[in-house]
Image 1 (cartoon, rainbow, N blue to C red):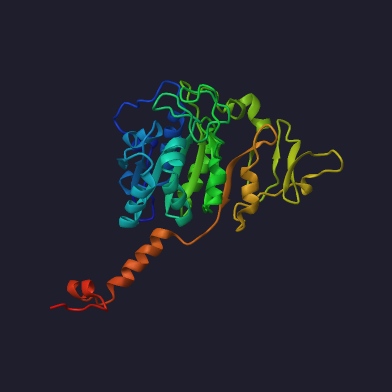
Image 2 (image 1 turned 90 degrees about the horizontal axis):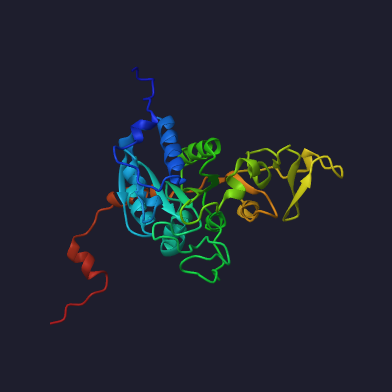
Length: 339
């Protein structure tokens, strides 16, 4: 290999010898395979990557990744991932979490990770249920959802993870579907290349406790009508015949049919991932079926100061300052000796 040649890897280089212990048919298998393919393509060695997880079905991820890894505690993966990235800034850090792990007990850690813009890639598996603990409702379960813990229907209004991320001003926000290999590959690659917190909501199926939660979006026969693939710099068009679009009327997204009432592609909302104002991106996040097609792909990718870089710059600056001895620090500028 010459000095100019980049190392090449295969997905199997990122797979361990551990038996993958998810339920047969679980959407996590597709996510694992997709991430392994994406990591192989970027040309970074497995030992230069770390995978951190909290608690939940999704959080078994580190066992199956031939990278450094840490299966941490419930909701605290952001704290551990942040510490790792600060201590070892040269490593690429990925975090696997679920809708319960990040949006319930870990909600506070999650939003602060996003607002700080730590250089971490966040994979949030959203199956709208607690799968590991056998089918209780989660923070993303729909209103009225009947589960083992809500036999009369949930009275909690669910979180929209993408809206939460944009509200916290995450610098990179994307959404994909577990079985959509093409879009997932593009999203994972874009997240890997982003400098800052890259948040990806993955609509994932739990075929045991919440089967078909995303069927209206994931099934091939529905996907063209119920989702809209976002492309940077291009008008928002969807539909099996590519004859529908989204027009922004003031601050209201409106579904229109191209060719009717004089509507042309030039009248449609043009997606801009680098829009510095999150207002329009937040409007996108509120588009939900059946009133709108659900946006899939990269919603936002902007440059912002990166937390771990700035913190390490401060640490380096402090090293250059002459420090007094410990006793002087303890005494402080105002102290008295009492005899």
